[in-house]
Amino acid sequence: MTETRAETSLRVTDMTLDTWRAVVDLWVEAWSQTMPEIDFEARRDWLIGQRAAYSRDGTRVRVALDRLADTVLGVITLRPRDGYIDQLAVAHQSWGSGVAQALVADARKLSPRMLYLFVNQANARAVAFYEKMGFRRMGEEVNPTSGLPTYRYQWSGA
Image (cartoon, rainbow, N blue to C red; front, side, top):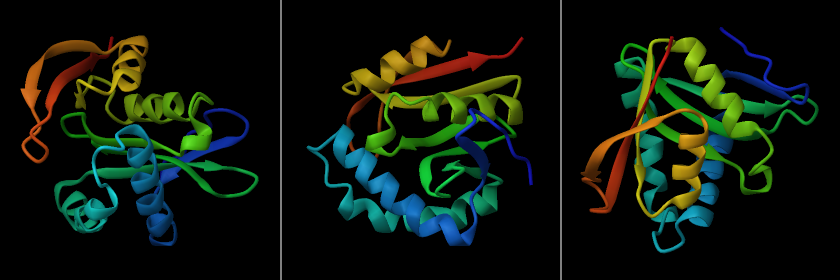
């Protein structure tokens, strides 16, 4: 199991079955805060079902843990073979604290040549974050589930 020490208070590691429930709760809470017009509680079962799909296709579910309290502060899902990030979510109370940066830094170590993802165009906070982190906007698409317009962002390693 690969671990990354991001900041002194954070530990990024693979998700375990013991942390899965906390990951699902965090995901629902973070997305509900980000896009309150969408019922993410109704999408809880979708994420629960994704665990098996992630396992089948080699996607790593990585969590940022508070080292002192051992609580989940954030989650990222990364398919290392092609650098696809499906989900990045941080607990609302940890926004702006470096958790998202630590998760992206960890993803870059696991997929050092390239990362890519899709972000809702209306999610201005995420758009600004990815651009600050060196991702380049590569195009526009539509989310097949929500019908919302998205941007494709990509980061290329050295």
